[in-house]
Length: 251
Image (cartoon, rainbow, N blue to C red; front, side, top):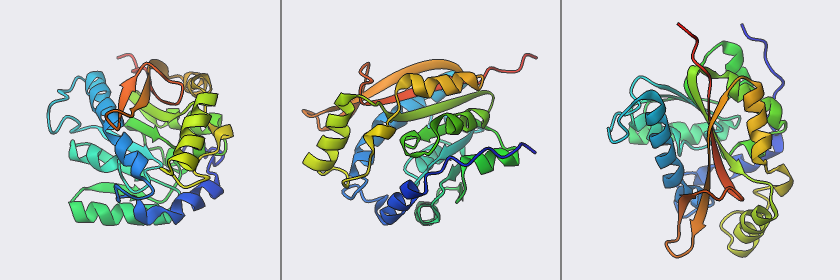
């Protein structure tokens, strides 16, 4: 069995999101920004995962036969759409409250998902590995970013994908994601994000490469005030997504 890595969970962050857990599925509640952001990241996931595994992204069951691990799944906002596309999904979160909310919602919608109140390090120690490992809007909330990303990378099977999405530590992100979103527009509760914990792309990508992954893509997301919606962009100054793959074992 793989030796357990040092736990990267920041308990203060877990407690903060646990306190808001009942609002995960309220599109007008405290997680409203995530609901608005979801179409961008879900479209990105469907396109890139389908491309990597040779699937038809237009198919309703495009992910059938693929195993997904959704790290920091919260209430299941990504886990459920992946399951609806046919994936076998394991959703993990260190907050038992979040997991209970996710389980209840999945029961209501009929989604079959293996939800666990656990950490990435604990899953790694079990020996389980996955075709696709997701770390979306979670990297900026962990205690040890390089250690966490090393664990994330190690959870991917040979030939598997890792998708990470986070916030860039720039002055632009400070102004938009913290001051603008929390203090001016009140899209998020004050204190949701700590700008000092935002992660520059090179700080995210280097640990993945050190763990043996190959970088495939880096893509930004920006808010379009005219459409009042998020869209993909070459601009990675605030929100961005990174795609990486573990090489296949030669046959």
